[in-house]
Every structure is written in C-alpha cells, then in structure tokens.
Length: 104
Image (cartoon, rainbow, N blue to C red; front, top):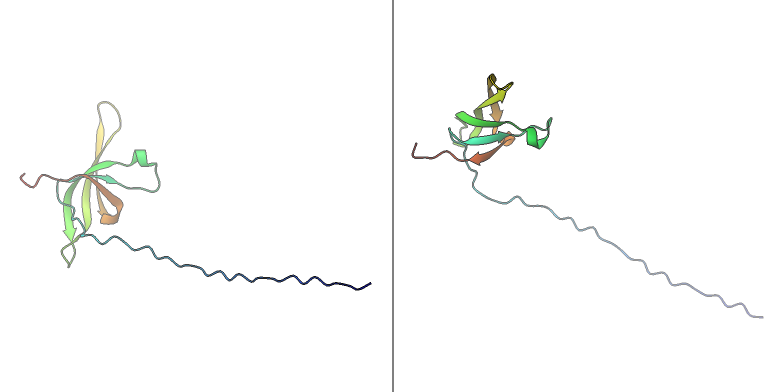
C-alpha cells in the first residue's frame, strides 16, 4: 500500500495596517467677547450641572486671540439668596451659547 501524502498549501495573508490620521477642521477661531453667554465645562460634574455664565473680561494673547476670560456665574442657594462667583478660565473650558450683540 502506497502512502499518499496530502500537502496542504498554506496561503499566507499579509495584512497591512492602515494608519489614518484625523485632520482637524481648519476654521478660523472665534474670539469670545465681553457679554457672551457661555457654559463652563467641568469634567468633575454631569453636563446638566455645568454652570452658565457671562463673560465680563477677556485677555487676548500676543497673536490677538482670546486665551483666557473672566466669567461671572450665579449659584442660587435658596429662593431668596444667591452667590455670585468670578472665575478666570482658559478658552478651552467653555462653550459659547449666545454671542453678545455688537450694537450694545
């Protein structure tokens, strides 16, 4: 009896990783202005608890873009009392809700 060898042919598949790089959308940065209504983003609390605020002062950098701003927020402690807080924050921690009217 003759032995028949069955030879399996292996096909080696070479996989190459596609490296995709996400590109940032090129857009002109919007400067924050005094009087803008903003939401102060805070990773420590839920998004629904982020405080609303009013931009009262801005600090432009050497290139003319606003990098930091002063924000006024109000925290209501009861029906009759509230506390006003002022914060200096970087521009990366805010989301503009309503732009200030340039006529006022």
